Amino acid sequence: MARDDAKSSSLRRRPSRTVPAAIVAVLVAAGGVAGVWATVERLATGKWPGWVGGTHLWGATQTWGSVVVIVISIVVALLGLLLLLTALRPGMPNAYEIDLGASQGTEDTEGTEFVMTRRAVAKLATAQADLVDGVDTVSATVTSRRVGLSVTTTSAQTEEIGQLVTSRVSEALAAVGLSPQPSVTATVTTTQP
Image (cartoon, rainbow, N blue to C red; front, side):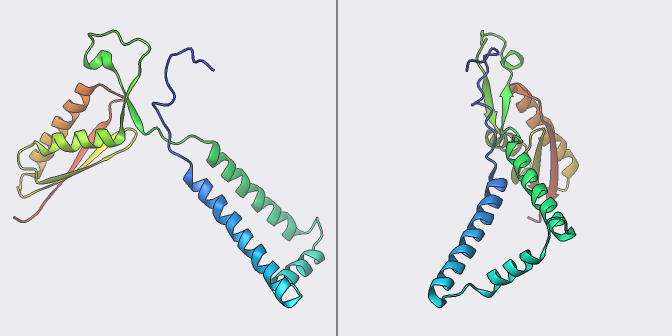
């Protein structure tokens, strides 16, 4: 199917839905283990395990209109609906679009889309913050709208270093032309030399 807006959906990948898949996998595996266990015990001893018989006896005493059956049905239906919605809802994008018009403005790039992954944004932010005088170590955390920097220094001038780091990283990210432009925050802590 061709797209009219000439943008590639593969460039803005979204993460896999591992949580719903893991929950369903655990439930299916638990059911399979229980079924194998009951079958092996049935073949070995000639009778079903007590928990299977107890479950059947309890279930046989319940009617469709009983409160317990209705509550169990509602809980199972809500859990299934929650898993379905979680699986269908797309995850957060893991890349920023680069607006070449804002960063270069010289070439005609109509129909071409450029992106920068969050990991690459974190590496750029870390490299730029590390160039500021007084910074000993730095690490970056990137979300869809924010770049958070954790800076350690031996200097007591943490406010000034934090402002320098924030402005340098913001300028570097603006020069790249990220869209949307993430906000940059820096947390500076002092360590003893």
